[in-house]
Length: 112
Image (cartoon, rainbow, N blue to C red; front, side, top):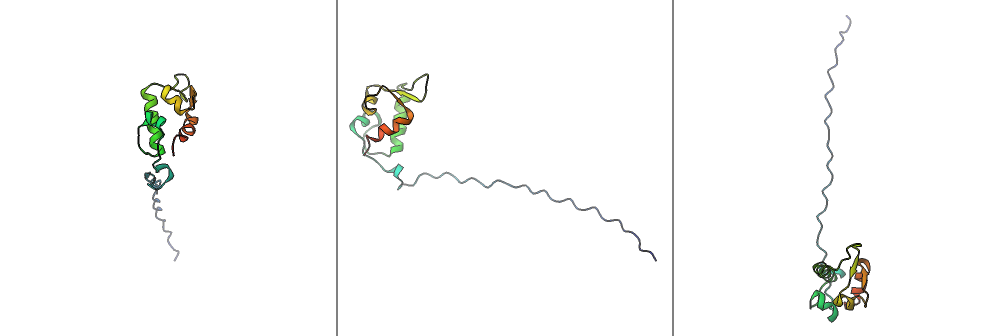
């Protein structure tokens, strides 16, 4: 007796596996012990702009930018430059215009 041919069953469709991206780690606040968060003493010239009392370097820069925006001291043509008023000239070593990248270097001389 010849063997009867058996039709093969249709292959089951393979499941589509959707890979998900791993969740990004939540940004954590800098640790209180980091150098950026260390409260520093503010000079009297800088205190006229950002306020008195020891504060972290990051807070000094934030308050400096608030002062710059409030008094419209950012150059209108080149936003990277800051036009110093009388208070900022004391901090910026007498310069009339300072680049935003040089600003932090000049401010660091007024922190201890």
